[in-house]
Length: 560
Image 1 (spheres, rainbow, N blue to C red):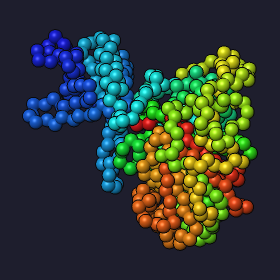
Image 2: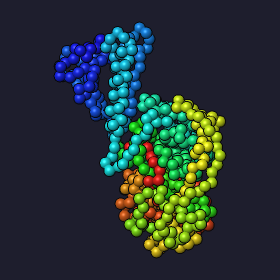
Image 3: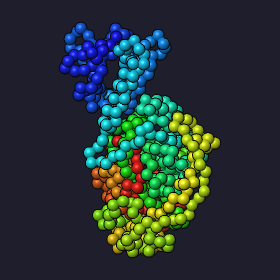
């Protein structure tokens, strides 16, 4: 049995706070094995108590801890209680070089007295102290402004069961579900049933019931969610809902980017999933840039990842037939497209980042009236928020915080907006750097002389796929579009070398005369070739003239 506090060493109080929480507990499997356990603001230190000198201390950094849970003994015969702390420290891989997060569980038996309730209260005190201390030790990057998710964080997790190799649901149950339980994150699992299901769901959902929306899929499902949020009448509030990404698709570009921004060792596949799950449990939130995209039909889209035309878009769409093989589909698509390399004719113009007028917040760029934008002069106007008084009636619903699995037939995951919300004022977000598509670009823009392109890629995250480091200097909220284009005349071997170098982010240093890289805040692309593919976040959109502008910090992303 553990020593009571009254028997404590005068220099430190066992099972109490004197600069640190200290206790002596037994092993959960063998009462004869005892441990001294101390908790400080940054670490949990464990040492086996033995007559032999020099017993090694094991120190767990609380920044690697996702949670701690207390429980009673398994039956009435056991008067003890238990607390278990869950850590995901970096350890060496078993089968290859490098480090990766690996799960470590530390469980202790508390048996101070013969009263089970007293022992449980002590176990709960330790569990609560470890949770509180670990919450203050979430890994933070210098210079990044974070907020924190509300605790407990009511989370809607949207899973596309057909994404990637069709294993997203199995990956969730096998790698993420247990971690969320360890971190005491209540969630509702929503399984999408068709294209744009997520878009329709979040457009109608009562978001007051949720503290975060998390996507377990490829990048396409997050594209749906963001555009669904931006189509709401209360889009300004809706788009501030923290978004999370769990890689379950083929490309997983945003997941790879988020992992990269955290300055962690490279990770792929299940290791990347574990890393993103860990960041979800730690609950740090930063701002996320979005890009507003205008098509010829006057349709407006919002993008978090990329706008592509030419080789990259072709590979992305044409490799869909190889989806069953996973991420290697992009390599197969690349080789196929290299064998029949195409050249596209078009016009490209952009606003260099250094020449763009800076705004404090994207949400302050709004339409001055309900009339069309005033072309070249729009960026000089002093604009203000103008309400859109249209509203829709919707039903009241209730919600549960328990973990559930649902689909569109279960209304627990898709609560309609309440009547109070339906009357909220809305405003229109204006892209003040863009003229109308039928107007010439402003004089401050750069017009590219070449008209024959192999590819044009505008990317705003570091990675285009798990193994494609497209924009090495990109950050999640740098307020930039990273424009990369390759002009005609490049040989097939040279183009292949560029993509191989992109795996390590070295393609911009290859000295290829056909490769151009610019940091911009707005761009316009006007295809001349009659046929082609344009993609936004990997999804095919209307083919024709398109223009885009960065909207800094418009959304919020669970990151590390």
